[in-house]
Image 1 (cartoon, rainbow, N blue to C red):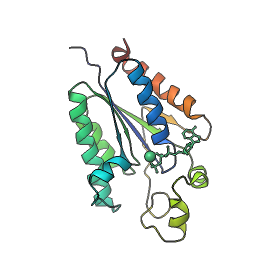
Image 2: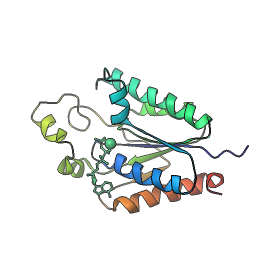
Image 3: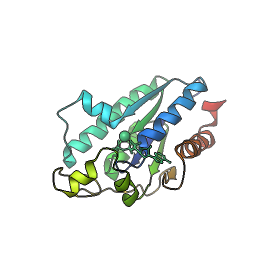
Image 4: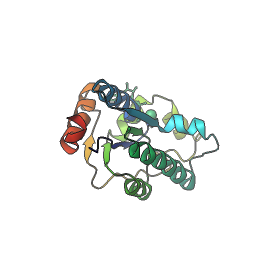
Length: 177
Ligand SMILES: Nc1ncnc2c1ncn2[C@@H]1O[C@H](COP(=O)(O)OP(=O)(O)OP(=O)(O)O)[C@@H](O)[C@H]1O
Ligand SMILES: [Mg+2]
């Protein structure tokens, strides 16, 4: 059987553009006839509302999504996962679970994410109303060797999505045959 599935994993700060780019990429993959499932951190947290933002809870969240991604991939479904996933070790764990893992660092600088402040959370974190917010009180460990890096402060959402698609095509040509 030709391997067609893969796990695309978008990691980056809140507001970096993960969900925006994930939606565009998933839509393009579907247009090409691939079976696709999106796993977005916010949606998964709604399914498991007890999950907080301590390091232990974040690790649990990331591992949970990694297990889901790996199961879907094993059934031939392409996964587009978008979650902050700030810790290198839990991303490494997920990489080990998946067969064909493509990590994209959405590297939009903190200043730009904070200026966008889509959810108003940076302002609340700066005021001390939100604890453990990544980039403010909690660390973000950038990937050392991601398959791709995109900085959405320099690109339109469509350009960023195209770069991701080009990277996937280069790495997994069989999926796009
Ligand atoms: N080139 C771009 N690519 C992606 N998003 C962009 C770009 N330029 C501006 N934006 C805007 O930046 C915001 C990114 O928000 P988005 O929800 O995608 O971030 P996120 O990384 O998913 O954050 P979170 O981790 O909080 O879910 C959106 O409002 C989007 O319209
Ligand atoms: Mg998001």
